[in-house]
Length: 370
Image (tube, rainbow, N blue to C red):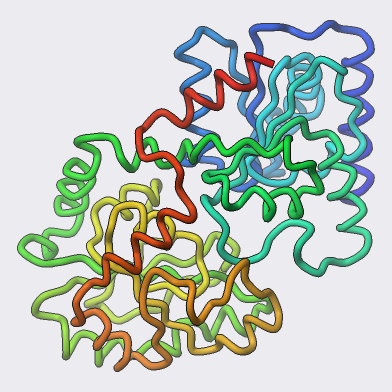
């Protein structure tokens, strides 16, 4: 069924591409990963809007099929396919599988922004995939003019992930970082979180944000590995703990009343800015905390299995910006330990070439300049 819908969308796209010319002042932004546009794609969208472009947003929400949303689905297939086909500039933050069958005009500039900074765990064509998925992904990547990355050091990783030549990978910085580094955003995010959670006033905030696993059973048991009661006993006087599950984990977070579930918090960047410490495992959210010189503790209770299943772009044991814990007790010890800024700075330098809040402008200049 999915393959039929991909081809049907592509048929409408190709028909529009044949009938209508490109619009030089139109840009399309496809977000099947983050429909709130609070990532690099969103920052570039706002940059293009500030330059007077007509900006077309295409999101996963367009495909939320139900009776009340049927007109939005029809709009996605029949109107937005035409707008996409006639957009001079196209940006994505993930794969858009119908693109495998779409014939973009020769002058269209298609840019993959991806949804994470730097290079952490392997992604794209660098991981094992079912042959049918890999075939579609290869076809999608052939439509790319560019992919943007945050540092020269990670160009080879992005080139492999998207099957591109090195010259097609532009190390222009992470537009997502523009928001994180902008003066005043951190203070505003903290004030907002304290209004929602008054218990946070006078305390430090810890964000526990594990990534997803490959099976439903593993995802259901994910939080059972963390001893929330021990954390509260040892650190509850000084810290408030927030939990945010990955969007691909569809189970509800079951946590004690003294822990706050922020999985549905609209903008994860505000949580990054408002929280003092991150606990994660293999999530690229650690990039944000490294960027801001905040401590990350890596709770990797299943490191061996995860490395075998997914693997990383570097040696996990030696290349992280923070310490590794196998138990909640070790997590607590690492939170209490002194922050190793030298180790963090090395990680940040490898993954970020720019810390100037101008990455979105650089991306716009580069693609429009072509």
